[in-house]
Length: 257
Picture 1: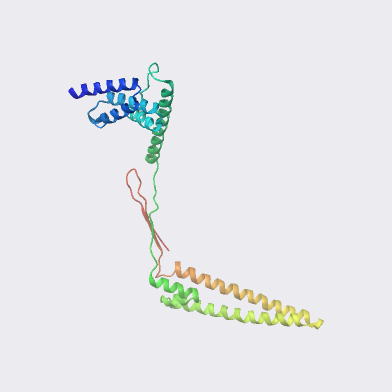
Picture 2: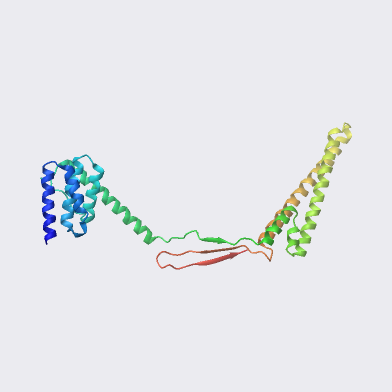
């Protein structure tokens, strides 16, 4: 009771100082009172923040006044100034602070609603690292198709692929050399009766060169794909779990190749 009476007296003193234009003193005394705000009623807190905010606004400290007015709204969102005893400028400023505060509250409500209604699936995907054997096999396979399969013990498949690679590589080298040779013969031929023959020989060799190179590329590509995804000793695993924010359920899956 004694403390409440002291607060009331202090608030009356703040009002008198404000009416006497002692704005700095109002702010100092208000801060001293707010150091014990846990013992002050909401009604008196609103009055202190109001007097302090008016003093700050009068000193052109709009940031300080805004903070004081926000503290009022945190206690009572329905608070409004008396239009008879308060300057229209202060009322207009307070109304702007109030509108901004309500917009913030509305935004926070929207965020909370979104969090409640939305199922979040964080990127918690784990890809198992390939084994050291697979890495070594992949390097060998890039250098020479089938070599990686042999390294992993895939004897039959490795032998077939290395044979195909050797065959297509050998034919590619042969037809590259042969095509260049036939091209030179065709370009150097001056006998009109042999020009068409030389061209046909060059054209045939050129086509065989392209077929051999395409075959070599196909064998190389097939070897890489088969080694990584279809060789029995190697499995690429992906695992993931997805917690739902509402009931913390978990979903686990694994994909193997």
